[in-house]
Amino acid sequence: MKKYLQLIQNDFPLITEEDLYIPISQTNIDSLDLIVIRVSLEKYFGTGVPDTIWYQYQTLAEALEYFHKNKKVIPMSNNLELKRIEYSESIEIRMPQMANSALSESWLLKYLGDFHWQLLSKGFGLRSSEFTDENGNRLYATFVRITYEISNVEFFLENDILEFKGEIEAFGDNTFISKVTGNNQKGKISSKLMTTFSLRQTDNSTIEKCIPKEKQGNIKQIESTPQYINEYRLLKKRLSNTLETDYYNFTVTDNNLFEAEYSINPYYDINGVGLLYFAAYPIIADTCLMGDPKLLQIILDKTAELLNIELYRTIFRDIFYFGNCNSNDKIKVVLNSVETDFGKLYLTKTLIRISDKKVIAKIFTIKEHQPYT
Image (cartoon, rainbow, N blue to C red; front, side, top):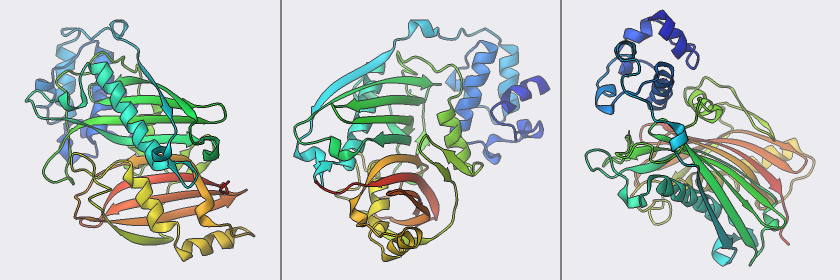
């Protein structure tokens, strides 16, 4: 058992031998952790475990005992048989894709999410409404992390053609990561999106992770645990104090420089299945804080020149989604940190569901001063 414990500790160094025998529900292991553990065990033992058996286990020791006794009994799927799932599309920038004389970030985020869905549908050979679990319950691809960077939004003008292309890979049966890029002659958009399948309950505060009936479809498996997933796991568990990006190293903090309350607009913020729209999270965060005089004073204290706050355009976001909420709930937006440097703002914000004080998102943003033309 100790040999297998070392295998788990490669991804989870804090798990002890004692933890193997504690009910999983009483540990700090969440649903995404279990996916990482399951994939790691299946690859090590060269065998799969049926869902009907996996979800009966109460402890990790029970799972390890199964793998030990059933080495190579159930053959793993051959990644060579799976397809490279790609999709491309051309979009003309028209008024619905624009805001404030430039590309609309709100539209872009919704479009990237829809593009990810298109890749999933192509990989499974299903329409979005046809994803179900083994009992026929409708499943939804729930976004858990989205990262995107944008060239100067003024590079994307009315009637320009944006060429989008992307591909998707699977990690286990329930986690999918896509990479989507968009280009025109001047600018570039790069993004990465991660989803897990969920079963929606009547209460949006408790969304159950589920495995689709068709498993991973024809989507190729990622061979080892991606850093993108590990960063998410560590930040969610408050085990990381830094988020390193190509542009800036954000400090992960719960500081409260100031806060604001937001009442959900059910006609705008709620999506077609009654959940808080994934694209609404960063817009809510900006709406609550960007015009606040306290933020303006913080910026003034950090820079010699106070520029019009409305002229700061988003060039980078990393959104970590931890939960959802009901349409009658309220959200508290907390500004954790703000730094300035050469016409850029570096912001960290937390979204909290007021009803139970649960953190539902952490958002890392870089905005650049880009005057209207």
